[in-house]
Image (cartoon, rainbow, N blue to C red):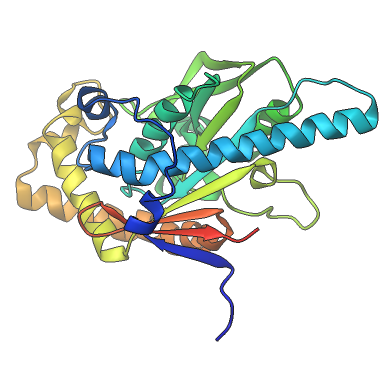
Amino acid sequence: MARSPHMIFDRTAWSQLRGGVQLTMNALELEALRGLKTSMSMEEVVEVYLPLARLISLHISAAGGLHHAVGGFLGRTDVASPYIIGMAGSVAVGKSTAARVLHALLSRLPQAPRVELITTDGFLMPNADLSRRGLMHRKGFPESYDRGALLKFVADLKSGEPTVRCPRYSHLVYDVIPDDPIEVTLPDIVIIEGLNVLQPSPSPGQLWVSDFFDLTIYIDAVLTDLRRWYIERFRALRDTAFRDAASYFHRYTLLSDEEADAVALSIWTDINEVNLIENIRPTRERATLILKKAGNHRIEEVKLRRR
């Protein structure tokens, strides 16, 4: 039988790799980190994310040792560049919750690293630009991002720039907020979460965002579950965030349950599923780790790529 490029762990086997990493989060803190309609239990934090935090800590220590050795070779003592983690996956798979939980755990490691969490939403072109280019119906597809700005942001991080800025995005108004950038100053770890962050360069020989990542994570689920989760989340948003009069989607609050489900299914089928199949899922095997979810959002399997 052919040897797999991945080591595959069921949840029980993966949980045993936690080692001595201690839980530093309580149930109230986890509740504040959960996304709408995304289930994550304290058991999952312990069994899945603590081993992941331990693995990342080991990677960072090894990278620090290599940096020190290379510095000795070069006769230099440059400050190490931040360790960058890329996290990808479909709309509605729970990336944002996973990224926030991982951010919290890594921030509380004994070394007390400075950890920043950046989403690529801020690098979407403003709605006015998307409309002018006829791309509003392709928002979230690779061509809807200012890919040059995202590449420069990550390259500046890796180059050791002391302060790097990136645009801020508002999910309420569904647009980039002008003149209100996020400042990232001297981070030790940066988590970059987004739909398309694992894509290779569109041009042969050109450096791309994924080339600067030290470790990558893809959160996976079957298509039928993703579709159902998106529809459930849309209905929940209709009853919560969309009720704000400033919301871009405020008009959807008048929909009945059946109408809301129909609109959500249409958006999913025409936009999100197409993006998933064409652009997001093909990057899955590039990830260092693949976290596979069951229909209840519970991670059941971890695939770790062999080094």
